Length: 255
Image (cartoon, rainbow, N blue to C red; front, side, top):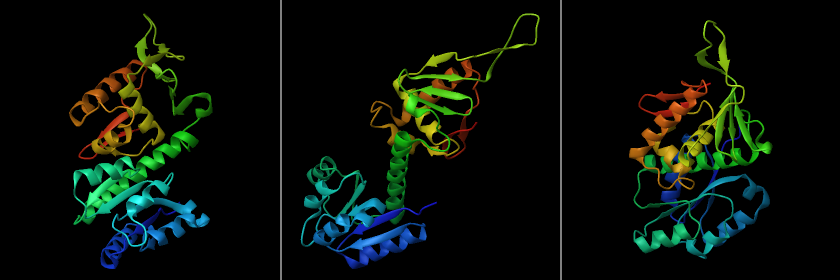
């Protein structure tokens, strides 16, 4: 599997060195730029530009500021790292295209966590557009994992698994045979995320972050209830145990 490439655009050599060392310990590849102008050359390099998975961007750069550089960055998540702590600075950067904003001084653990979230969101978006080992039939507007099939247009979930019910005086299980249940917008977003990343554990914070664009009304306090409702609907089609709670971590699709 290709290691993720992260660009560090920071004129403070000491801070850049600390970030780079921490990223390499986590298994990331890195490249550096020490000014806005140098960053432009980096982004213009076809090979480097195609390999970049994420950019860490300082705002106060020589040559060209981070604010001026930000609108030129396309299709690559940017985490701004800046000593500017004003609300207006943060709002301007986020509206200008930054995916996240962290102020100096910062804790490396927090930065690494924010990087993980952004890379995960990027992978999920790529999976939604291209499919993956677990995803079948997305060109037909459907996403299938194991016995589950999610209709991406109608927001309905169905299963091939026999439903846990019996015909009177027989031991023959009723088969769902395409029977489906309708999902709310939030339930659909949660299940789509878990199906696109079957077997991967997501913390509550990661789930909320990944589905925030589709379900801005979902909160930390309501997420548990949405998952409970989703599990109940899955039980109706014979998939009662497919969403597993991993104690102390979060949830995953377990088929």
